[in-house]
Image (cartoon, one colour):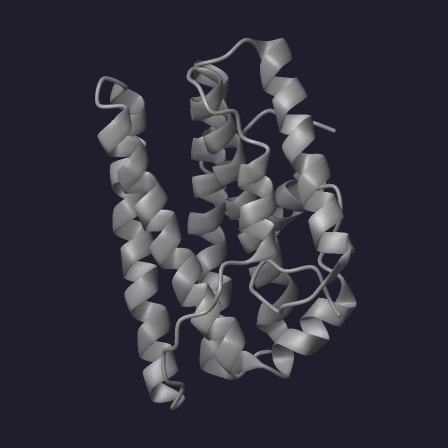
Length: 214
């Protein structure tokens, strides 16, 4: 498996999806796709939550690592884009008559972050790698579901593939910049294994990044 990020801009959406599917260890289960299609209100509510949390993570990194120039620039762009996506998902919900309601945190995010180290520089490496995998999994889910969604929502999910693919690359590039190659690969493997386990196993709650619906 090639774990190095693609730093050049990829224009072909199929190439973005193929690269990300090669990066992740398992695809989204069919059972999750079928459940998501039958529960669009929960899918969109949690999608909105995910966009907001992604922006919040970017702001947290900006605040904590003020001296890291490239991180500052990439996270500033990411925050702008994630907040735009948050607004757009809320607009879709309004059009579809879906009321925003708070949801409990997903098992996925909680379990991924439970493996992160608590002290820097290891903490930063782990948070960046988790961010990369979350963005990659989001992209893979958009690709898995968009052809079967209502037309306008499907087009919107397809349009997100490019930005999510770039966010994943940015996170990986930052992680590689600030750690040794051996440690980078070791920690990346830890989180990819965790992602695969969470996505493939039964999950008591349906969420955007949940596993197989129980």
